[in-house]
Length: 262
Ligand code: 1GP
Image (cartoon, rainbow, N blue to C red; front, side):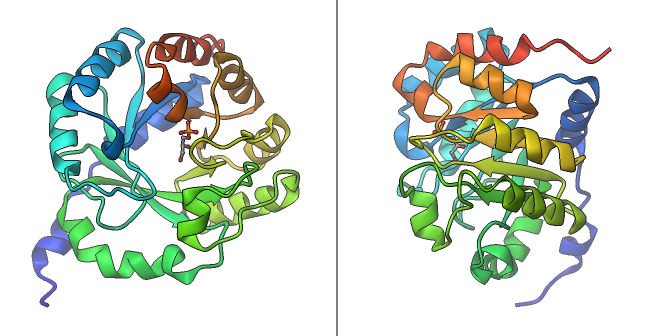
């Protein structure tokens, strides 16, 4: 394989990350809907795009821990055709890269001790990721125990951070930020029985300056609201909206109801 000049000169945009940091500076909380390409039909995407536009959703995350089907590109193309909301890939595996998206959460599983997910798979997929031209957002990904083993903890072969060990979460997030991660994503895993505690969100948000994404098991507007109050900058919801797409309205309204910093 020849690493050509095209990899080295690709101009990486920073547009979406800038929007995230500007919102954080203003104290404006964001709401992101997670779409698992395996779980949606064309018709469902159509309906969801209408609802997300109406509810003023900030970001659409696309990905899953284990995408079985092979139609990521098609899903992203369809979403881009129907929606103006930025599409950010949230890849569970290195193959989940679509150049049709706007950005990619470039995840390193900093809560685990599996070198493959810290750096190994990044090395293997580096040329393809760079060539995609996607905006890359280096993200320290932290899995927090959500009460039951999730796909992400099984696949990653990594023990999640215990739900009551705020200090481990704080130190992990701090180390991630100091290593250069531009976002920290705390995730209790898709469909977690227990979402991350407000106390842990609060503790972590106090020790980092980069934006904090929180997801996993958030299934009511109240939880979304309280997580924002505790210090989350972006709330991600997948499962609850898959089950009841209309929930997107109240969830988004709850997140956006937090008053701006003056
Ligand atoms: C999972 O954080 C996301 O990685 C969203 O979780 O599907 O439980 O909302 P839910």
